[in-house]
Image 1 (cartoon, one colour):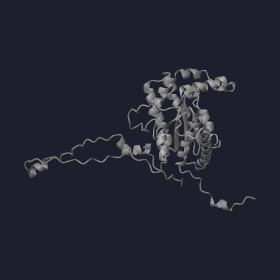
Image 2: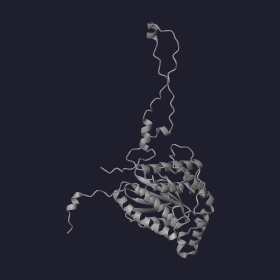
Image 3: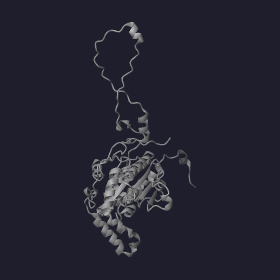
Image 4: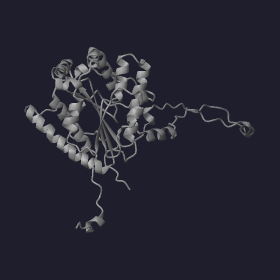
Length: 366
């Protein structure tokens, strides 16, 4: 039998638990009997003719939250950070409290201006070189954890990197995941959909690239492009926008309930820092390949994209797929923060190598 992780249960309902709760009959509340009225004592003849009174109907009100029961015990919640100081620090860089979108109404708004893109909350304040060395050491640790993750094969890991142009998605891939063996790590860079992809629903191409057992997949951009570009350019209505938020939440919940850890990072860069990085690409002929004239059009829509990000962060920050806003003006700190959080999550999985085969102890290689 497969090993069952001995970790806390998920703090949100699974599809199985919600369905079970809906079919279960709620217990009727106790009803206080009214005071007996003085009436004439019925005769034996009238008692025989009088039909029995039906039981009084008691109106019951069951909220949506009451239908939610605890998930199965074998579930594991990887985002319960054990280090209290680190957990508190991480919460400060989340877009509010994760919420189950099926149970709560309009999410509280998110204001990206409250998150300083130049901040360095995960820095030890011992200088840039110290942070670089720490990030490099974390990358080595992640390589070791990924090796066990691949052998354990009880989970899948999907890391989503979102951000404006030049926010550092490629740099994160090199700095955080560059030490991992290519055997168990795969990167997907999402561009504009092809004609074949347009002929399907917008999540069709995404689902084909999610990780398999023991695999780490990193998305450079993701399904969230479909609630950014169409929203900013007015290609979809507000009703379609809300519908897509719900569909993405359900999609990610399905992935989570089938063993995929979905960890989402929004690389938060300032407009001035983006200007400098785009100019560097223009000034260096070796970086011209990284520049596209459409980048300037998107930059001219900066405020609209910031608002679109605020809306999607509020609507899709769930317990099963939480967002982390990463201040990304510092490349070194960006890598340090993401690597730190990934290490904590992987350590929560209680990863183990499969048990050895006793028969192999007797085999001698000649």
